[in-house]
Image: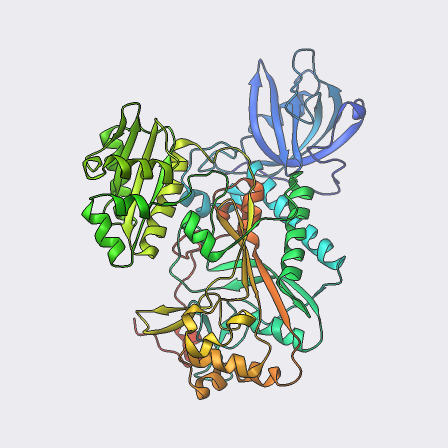
Length: 595
């Protein structure tokens, strides 16, 4: 754009664009910002000037200053300008009650055009119908929108609230390394080649797990850190390759101590940042209870529709599908979609397809109408079985009953997903309704068929329940962990555990994870050695900071509370990363690509 621009010179901003009100009427002010909108009303030019603090209406009136009015004629959206003028009351009938500055305007008599802008690829407004790809490509423009600025300011306040809270409870903030050692557990590491040690690599940390345990062994009994973590995993819609945690570790504690601090911090954040009062204490469910009632280890408690076992009704029926599943050790469970007996056949077929996509072989259904139970399978339920079914499902006329019969893991997964889908379709989770929950006593280990070995549910440093230690020898898959997750409205926002503090138990767990003593020493020798030098009982928790802020901000995606996020394919669209590098750099690192 050929329009000549000016330097700022000796001009200094006196106010922000959100600070003026009737108290400043008659004062001369100097404002700077971006042109949000330009309007020409009968020769008078009106400009809404924007900065991150707000919006102020600037008036260029040819009768007041003809030269400045002429200079303002080429102003367009996103020009950067500085203006001087006098604060005046808006004319009667022109007050904007929605703006903090809506009672005043600035009558401008001096203007400097500091920079120009082409027409942006999308409007810099909160309500825009623009694809996320374009927004991420031009993130520096997207971040000018008020909604995004509010999100980042909320994130800033969440940082400060966290630090203030933990500092007031004797926690110290300690930074741990970003260049660390690759470990065999969890997702793939991001590797960093070492130039000074050719053929060797650092790894970016998936979490500061071993370092915070070492800090406990070092005597720093209350640690925290707001830390970047990195995982090279196949990303889902709302995952990021680099994400932020609030990391907390404590010595000489049991589960309730760590959970108490985490609860208090969560309540403080919601109260201080949103004025929302969460319950005290948070309710708790064991992992087994959560899976049994909700089919999920992060259940959404904002609505009911719990999973109901119908073993008695199934046994009393003549329905062979249910019988064969029960005889093979499986389960038959259902959910009651209250008031949904009016669903059409196509709507029911849609639910059947949803269940099959979630892994079910099929989905049985029964409508409870004023005339009784109606379905193609009702004929297999004698009157006594129907009575049992109505009782077990707490059913009444108007309800739609949905059933899955399969292995317990499949029943839980399918009905848990179907429960959430029905809640969305019925509008049961709209509006603000905050339901926190602790999930405890997770399984310590599970068998991974692909890897043909045991893997840790949380991580390999999680302690088993004291009463389950002997099960590590006899039946390790039955051992429960001293682990706990904090769930809010169906989102896991924090997870932690009491750690293993004895070398013998840690070595035993490594063996169960198919790590040879040599591999354990190579990967974790520093930790095993440290555990011999008087390791205190300790435990901790880590909050998913991005998810927590997204919930506070009312955003569905964590990308909307991160300044410069990657796509769900781990690509930085704005800066076009990752990207090829020069052969010279690769040669310095002793690397040759195979592509």
